[in-house]
Length: 181
Image (tube, rainbow, N blue to C red):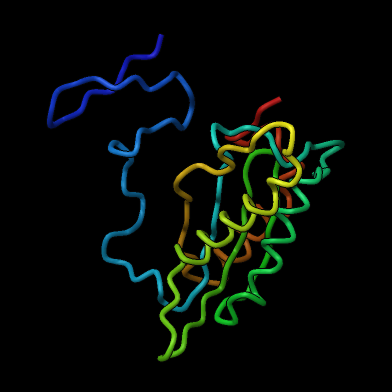
C-alpha cells in the first residue's frame, strides 16, 4: 500500500490513490523556473501527459506510432497552433500512446506577450473539446494531467539532441519512463 500524503499546515493526510502522477491540487509542486519569463522568445521542449498516463492516443507497432482517432485529434490540434498563434512555430513533435512531446518556438513582439502556458492551455483544451466526439458512449471526463513539463532549449546542440529524442521516441517506447503495455 502506498502511504498517504500529509498536509504540512493542517497535518491531515490525503490519500495519493496509489497512482503514478497523482497529486492533489494543494500538493502539486511548482515546476516552472521561478525567475524565468515564459513569454521570452526562444525554444521550449514540451511534454504533456494523459491523465493517469492512460494510453488514449493509439499504440506503438514495430517502433512506429499508430494514432487512433483521438491521437489524430491531438496531432491536428498541435499542427493548428501556428495558425491560432502567429507568434509561435511548431518544430519536431511526437504524439505517443499516453503523452506528447513537442518543440515550440516563441517569438513575441513588443505588442504581444503570449505566455507559453497560454499556448499549452489552448492545446489541451482544444484537444479535449474535439476529442470528446469520439467518446459519445463513454464520457471523456479528463484527458490531460493538470500540468505540463517544459525545458528551455538554450543552444543548437540541445535543440538537435531533443529533436532526435522526439523523432526516435516511438522506437524507444519500451524504455520510455511513460511506457505502459
